[in-house]
Image (cartoon, rainbow, N blue to C red):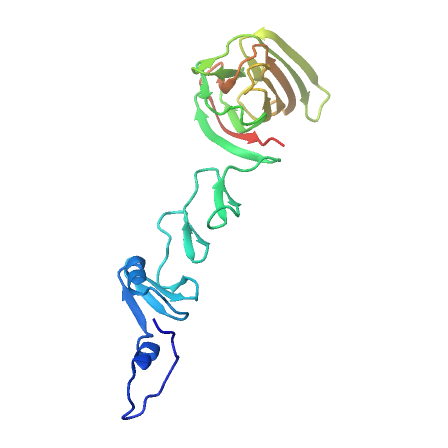
Length: 288
């Protein structure tokens, strides 16, 4: 294929040579069924050549080293795809849930989808809204693994519509099975705006008391809890955090553990009646 010669104003009677045809007249936009058909027909493209591909609806020009799209089409095919580039525009397919786009010079397009790197921050695991928690409780299974040393549980609001309705916490492990023994916990209560303080502890119980309603009327509780060592079968699972009770207008410092060392995979929340509802969000705290 001859190189393009640009523009020429032909005069009457002028001889039309093969070079004129190749250099001027053949320099329009060629139409091919596909890139494979184009490459089979044009084995030595020249800089400035242009073509249209029917299968992708693209117009491309030859840069001197590669065919480059100039418009009229897109390599994207799936929700979430993004544009990438190697020597030509290309598709970067959407990655798996909870992965992030990461620079990687070893990739053909210089980017890849990957799990977030460690070194700080938190990774979202689950958000759940529940209601009518009775003695059987609501389970949150497969939220703990050995991926993280620490988990953060944010309780936006747990509402108790019944007086004297305590909120209980139990660990769960593979099966799934609820751990129903060997809980040790402490609670410090401080009434906001007053001097009332109290302390409670429980030893070798079937569960831990997260919030003690103690005969008050309906109330709601917010909490921020940290869970540690749940993915390590040789260590005891620990939990600690802060809770706020609007009815008592009190702040509570809570801490507890289970003396049975095993890999725990989740937890269970329950209460003394069915009239409890709330929203919980769980995060894994990335390892440094």
